[in-house]
Image 1 (cartoon, rainbow, N blue to C red):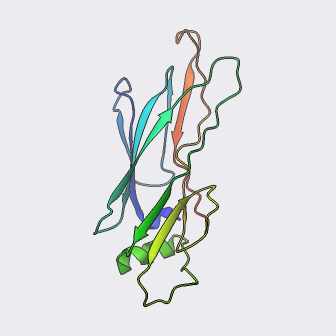
Image 2: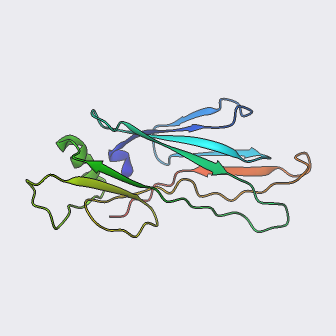
Image 3: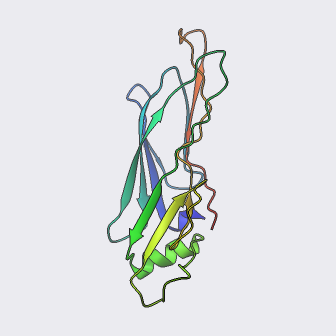
Length: 160
């Protein structure tokens, strides 16, 4: 469960949305809105970490598919590596489902690898972070005719 090491997720929606800065402090970390156009969606994931890194930012290109075409299912995988995390943060990562690198001794310098859902690389400590985002969107050339749906979400699906 990623809530052990994720403090909050901040979605910076387009300025045309009411309250464009959306803060999710509890799972599921997601925002659902309706709209008629795509935009770059900055997403910040804040960690429960007293040392750096304290957050990571993803700029997600939220795009819409054309009316009459199949929905868009755009997944973007990101890989994060934590070099020499503090013992406290390492415990949080492990509690969330991370595993120790079987090739390293406990006393050796180590790194923790955090991987997004769908990733296949398996070395160092790893977790699968939620995929950012999984969306099914529609659009129309006339926004008054069709109400489109932005589904910008971070799914909570850790898998160790």
